[in-house]
Each structure stands twice: as structure tokens, then as C-alpha cells.
Length: 355
Image (cartoon, rainbow, N blue to C red; front, side):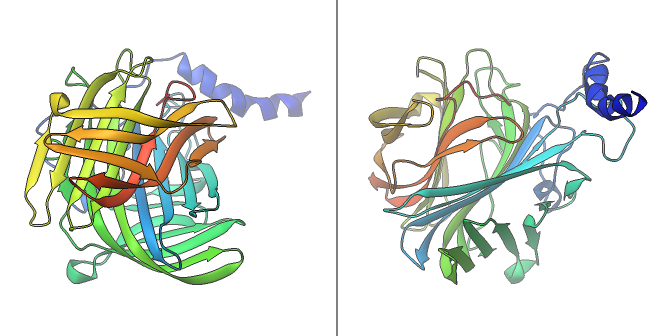
């Protein structure tokens, strides 16, 4: 009986801690200056954070999509526990490869910080087991290194910047709703040159292409009525970069929207909610949960009229750790007044998004 009590105690401690003073999360404040490489690192005082890389390869085959995302979440239930392995910070990661004419392959990892996983507070350096994302070097030698290993696929990639960082919103402060507290700090790095190795079908081959890096941290994004978002990050064929998103309600209406466009010469234009529209054109129904995802959309962004086309309809990611969640995350091409390739992400269609 005593041994059984000992085993159950760690499971009960988070619940006991939750009954104490609720945690205080840092807000994303307008006017906060960002500094690098420090702000490539983790921000443990915020509720949630992610480091997100998506890309399109042209070798070994054209239009192979890949993504690796590390998430950090501060649940708040273990704030009062004084232990290096208490679940103060939970890390999880999703990796995927899309092959045109084939199927989406994806894998996931999850662990608590200091127990099989960790992140740096001074630079981009995050890992769960053998999976990692790291920034290194300086000047012309600056790069990111991505590594994900799974029985179904693997990649080991080096990403080289060809353009400066892109601070989204107002110098990295990105509003997500009508209230100013609905916001994040948000940094992108488009048009990253990709080289490395990709393993598919038990064969490892050289890989090259272009990628997009996002780093975002916040404590409150979805306000009352928000169930999810639609987002795109597109490396344009002419060297420019386009990011756009909208926050959706349960009926598919837009609560808030924003977009930024940086042309090949480096000029950045921003578009407010009145200038950003996502209009569904064609849907794909998930055989896993019955959700309808608008995999083809018409986008109105300022003067631009665009259409998205996925390289594969079924690019839904269904994960189990740390909680079950399903969302659509896939490589698309856009055509219209702007052309390019990148990723479309759609959340909150299977169930309301929980952050």
C-alpha cells in the first residue's frame, strides 16, 4: 500500500499546485524592442511559444514539402513545485514530409524540459531527444540546423539566410484581435536556402530548396469567440515574401486579419483587417474526423488577388501528445498577381483550438 501511494503522489502534485495562486503570464506589449540573437531563444515567462520551419524541396524531387515545429508551453499547474524535473515547461514537436502523388508522413515528440528535452534562453537551440533546431554562426556563416528522425522518414538540413529578418506587425508586435492584449511577438525569416539530406523509402539522398522560419511567443491570442486561424507563409518566385492570417469564429467568419508583404527589394507593406480576406473555394473532408478544410482559397490582400492550390489534399496532421489535436498544415502554390510556394495552416476545424 505504501509503494502504491508513493507512485501516485507525482500524479497528484500538479492538481494540488493548481489549487494555489493562478500563474501570471507575461503579456505581449506593443513597443517592446526585440534583440537578436537573444530573442531567437525561449521566453519562459509567456504561456506559449513556437519555432516553426516549413519548406519546399526541388531535389530529390520537386515540391516535396517538409516542416518541423517545436512548441513550448507553460501550463501553470506546477508553478509551486521546487524540482528540476517538475513540468514547469512542456516541449513538443511535430515533423512532416509531403510527397506529391503520395501521402503525408508525420511524427511527433513530447517531453518536459530538463527531462529529455530543453531550450536555450539566449538563442534558438531547442531539442527533444535527437530532434533539434539550432541557430549557429554569424555573418555569412549564420545558419539554422534542423534534424528529425523517425522510422518513416528523416531529414538533416542546413538553412542559410538570403535576406534579413522580417519583423511582423509593428516591429515584431503582432495584433491578433480587436483588443491590444490579443497579440504576440512574431519574427519571420523567409527565403532560407536549404541544403542537406532527406531519407524516404529507406534511401537517403541530397536535398535542396527554400524554407520559411517563424518564431512566435504570446500569452493570449484567441479571444472570446475565436476557434482557430488560417495562415499562410509564402516564398514568392520573385524573391519576395508574403504572410497573411485571419482569426476565425465558429461560423467561419473573420474576427481579425493581417498581412505583410515584403518585395524583392526589401520594401515592406502591411495590410489591416479591412484589406485581408480568405474565401473558401474547394473543401477536402478528413476521413479521420469528418472535418471540412478549405484546401483551396481565394485571398484578397490589398490590391492582390491570389488562389491557393495544395500539392496534396490530405495534409492533415493528427497528433496525440501532449493532447489530441488535428489541424491542416501543407505545402501549397499560389497564383494570381503574386506567385510562389509555401505553407497554409488551418486550425480549429476539427475542434476549437486550445492554447
